[in-house]
Length: 354
Image (cartoon, rainbow, N blue to C red; front, side, top):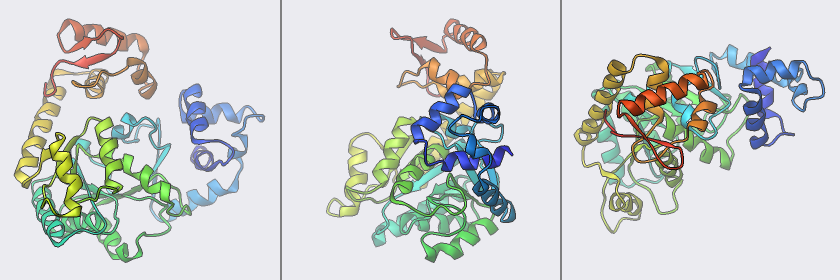
């Protein structure tokens, strides 16, 4: 069974993460890899067809209402395809994941000050009442405050776990975990049932957190906080970074204040953030009106104004489109002044909000 093979493949200890992605790239997709391996008993991944662990994990997910979204399949979140290494699988429980244009990632320290707690709760409550969903990691501190504020004000929130669905970490958030699902929220993880929280899981989780939202709001964070990883991932994905200013003598405001100094948007209230989301929404509506085909829309969303993008990478990430059609569309975009081709062969958009 395809799903059981994928579970075993993600857990296969004899292959490094890089080797797994290389095998998928060589095959063209996870589904094609499954078909290829089925016909080659000498393949390293052949044992993934028969390992009982995949069957047991799949049964646990099914029993507990956890859906399995596989890289390359139609229901896989498009926002994650922008990652250099998107999750091979995303396990999902609750409501379907909304479009990134309606979501904001909220991150920060596990040890917020009274100021940080108050401001995070206030801004999140105003954002969700305006229709913005909140993405965070269910950690202690700012994460938990953001999720709770969203639930308390009847908003949508999405949790990105750093472990499988067999447990809730930290354990004091079990009640909040249940409340999020009851309120119509979503819980996701790239880790299958039985995989516990490891230090590197939290780092890897941050890239998903960054990818699923349209922007990232930093509330409070020390200079050595893991928040920096999420911000770094967000910058790689060209996400808008919003930062809440704080007292210059507060250790938890040092990093947010540095972000503002370095060019992040100063988030002094929810309305400022909503104004930017309005621009993003208008841009999305314009894209939908101007660009008719799925290829045109996907290509425009992939390209950026500030950072040149490789078409070779686009062809790999969006293998469902024919290379000939991609090149014809690019040529048309150049003629219409939508994109520019730079000297090294990469492309940039001519306008951010088209």
